[in-house]
Amino acid sequence: MRKAALSVSLVCLLAACGGSDGSPTVRFEVEAAPAVTAPVEVDEALAPLTEPVESKIAAIRDVLARDSLSRLVRLAEAEESFVSNFAGESHRVHWDLLRRTGFDPLAKLGGLLDGPYGTRQVGDQTWYIWPDFAALEADELLPEKLTFTDRARLRDLVGEPGLERIRAGEDYPGVRTAIAQDGDWLYFVHETQQDTEELE
Image 1 (cartoon, helix red, strand yellow):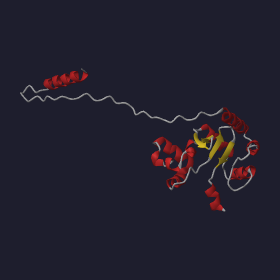
Image 2: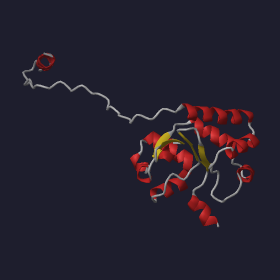
Image 3: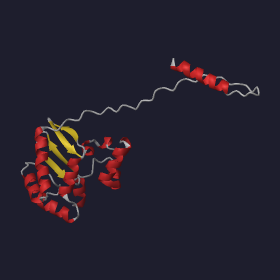
Image 4: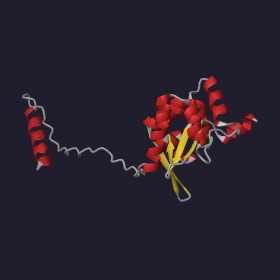
């Protein structure tokens, strides 16, 4: 009905536009434009944080609120297999050295936890990983496969050198942290094992 009405309206309009000097009137039928709908994005359901994970995040945030590196060290040392670096240094020595270079572990950790997370299944455990990019496989992380917004966010996190490493097939090379579903804080690192080996 709408199509017919549109056609009739166009014919009438064009007929009215015919010149009074006897110039020919053009008549044609135009189909109504199809309705335009936005593409539907289907995201895989992200596993919600477990209670032990939320409890661990609360403990970390309490340390961050106190701005205490000593408390962060104690929290990390209470974990059975927590990793802060791949050089075998103590958490305290490592984080102190980073602070001297202008890298503030407390601020960086807070920034990570404020952002989106991803998950990975490791054995029978789900690991919650910040940022979400660090949970992706290397081939999923290629900037060309990401949305414009995610590509810009990835560049902010790892810089152009990091993007080049990703394009070369490396895993996420930036600062990252992870907590297992049972609440174990697994790691908070700013480098890869390969980086450390290259420096030795």
